Length: 150
Image (cartoon, rainbow, N blue to C red; front, side, top):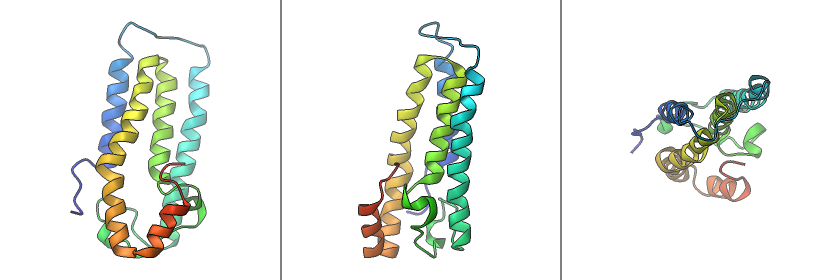
């Protein structure tokens, strides 16, 4: 149950590749001179949110590895975890938004909802089950207070 079939990084890569392929379709493309500069904004935000999630878990001295949830030793609900239960995944989503801006193609944005759906289905629901079993009522109360994404 703790071994996942599609790790988050593979889901990110799969969505990024799909977005690139969609950007090759000669339909709905747009070019603007400063797309790369605008892409830096969600990229920087994604790095910051993801790093804040990693830092909070490290500060609590618990695992950051989503594949080995059995090693989670503490429920972290402080720092960035006050605003989102999944800051590292939110960071990856923001990186995909930066990629979509960089690609400059309307269809490339389809990768974002696909990533959210895949993460919810193949990662987050599993994590939530394991953490609920491990931490019980405090985790369930945390889930009622803090949204899954934002």
